[in-house]
Amino acid sequence: MGPLKGVKIVEMGGIGPGPMCAMLLADMGADVIRVDRLVDPGLGVNKGEKYDLMMRGRRSIAVDTKTEEGRELILELIEGADGLIEGFRPGVMERLGLGPDVALERNPKLAYGRMTGWGQDGPMAHAAGHDLNYIALSGALHAIGPANGAPVPPLNLVGDFGGGALYLAMGMLAAILEARASGKGQVVDVSMVEGAASLITMFYGLSASGFWSDKRGQNLLDGGAHFYGVYETSDGEYVTIGSIEAKFYKLLLEKMGLENEELPHQMDATKWAELKDKFADIFKTKTRAEWCEIMEGTDICFAPVLSMEEAMEHPHNVARGSFVEVGGVKQPGPAPKFSRTPSEIQRPPLKKGEHTEEALTDWGVASDRISGLKEQGIIK
Image (cartoon, rainbow, N blue to C red):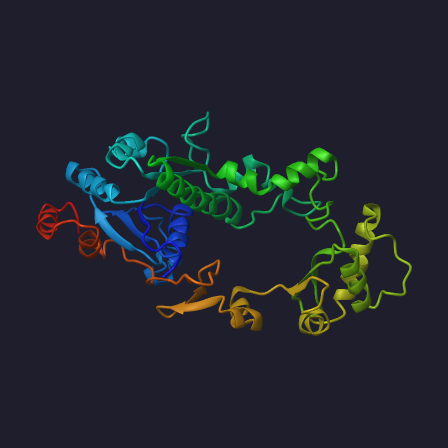
């Protein structure tokens, strides 16, 4: 069951990128225990546990982390874990008595993953923030949006999930592999600012070379080029084209009925705005379905813009099994796919504290100890 079968992770309950990272590791077979507080303030959003999809695949225990007994219980779990992930502000885990020095003393091979927006140090390390703030500081947000408008928030994909969860997952796996070779654990310090900046490394290079302009909507990949962008169709839907290579562009012109017209050279950026207007007029002559009939599956580099509901029903995604149903909720399946040790969703989204006795027992905590902690109100 998954390439990470046998890997054990302690997840300190949090929001956003931490849970996303834990979900990814659990989908790939890791045994992840989430440590939730007895009383969780939450975010004020009650959508129901079954729809909290990032909480899938793992078990939750509810622990009073501010008591000595609760702290000792978590340290016992850490002793048997390969890694720990936490997403609190710098210093919170230390105040709980669960900081890296204490944890690594109990388990010298531990990969101790820390997820923050700004990083563990620096002048902004202790300030509050969210995805949008982090990608603003990285340079990524400035590049996203229309030529004559403000930058556009790309959901929270670039900071929380791209620069955060994915970099934490990669860092944890690297640290676990290294610890198995060296016998020594370490801290993995993930900053979403740095993760988001890393994601746009290519564009920093293009900018340094003079090929990329800081002006939004005027570049090859930001909607400035007429052959790489989104166009509205006659029924108010949208399609995408990405015909960068000359041979793909030639095919695009043929399918649009422009193969015999005298047009400026594809890479003449001074003519892109003019050609965008021309393309926009042509794409508005047919419905999205009609353009799909003409272009989908060709080398134009074309795809319709689908809603989430439509994406789940697209024939390609259906054929690949890209979406699955768990607990009555259809959702994206595990990614990536493995040929020999396939990933799977181990269980539906957790309810906080619902696996306390089961998970503690599986991780080697004695039954009489569990009973005593319950009687004291340390766990529930």
